[in-house]
Image (cartoon, rainbow, N blue to C red; front, side, top):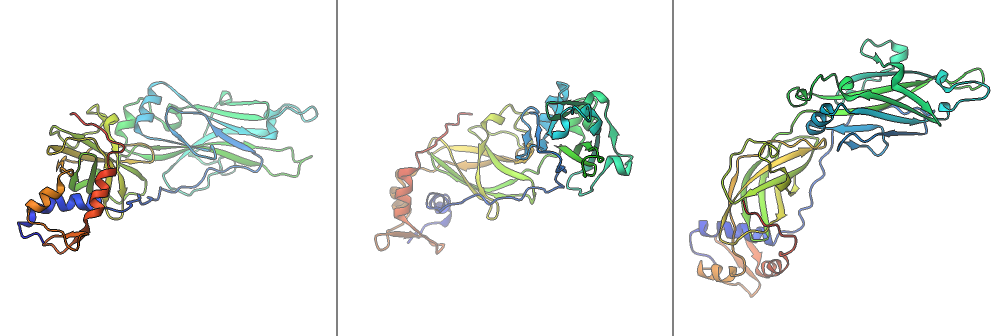
Length: 355
């Protein structure tokens, strides 16, 4: 038993919990759901063109972009392009040019997660905008709709990506009008969508932390947010100010992903630190659009030696019980052998932090 001041063992008890912890598999976080862009049965495939580093959905119909992509692509006057593969995009020897089978394209926008079904042709919706004829190209079985990102989102400059703080869905809609005298098919429409998420997630708050030379564990208060996709740590040997964006500090590339259980708030990640030192750790969250939150206020964390942990434990008044475990005055118990095994395998995936 340990008879000394329990505070002496506090960081070491954390080290035991860290090193002897079981799998902390990250709990999946539900992403925000919205109405899926309509894909007409008359369309065989939809594919969005690359827009910087924006995400493209598996079905090719949705582009998801955040603040960084918005700013860069607006600045570069980039175009948004959707390609719709359809047999009606072929000229016909009898029916004539394929252009007659299409109407539009149109654009409109909805707030994120809205489920409104908008038919720009039938409803004559005042929120629908008709693009110019040049926006539609038809050739070889593919109808392509192209529109400037500036026009689609209504931004005159890139600075608005940082200041607007909106989360909107911008749709491109194209109508297909089959020749019903020979084909018993009603007119239909198909869509592509750009999700422009310009709202940063809230910063998580680190409560406690402990680290060995090769592994760190943090307990973090996480905000309830459906679209947060990951948590990251910034580690420094020097104290720094929280409340800043990692990019503003020029240190976004130094962020380390945390294997965080969002239910318990406990997370781990590999490090490469010097034993017996102190480091400063701040955390940030990132949403599905790759928007980072500001960094939390940094937490001071001791880098605990593990190679001579047994000497420390005995020196603090500890003793082995039954040859397999050790206990503390707090009534908790953990396997000493778990600690010894963990110290042998934790040298994997280490990162050296020098700042």
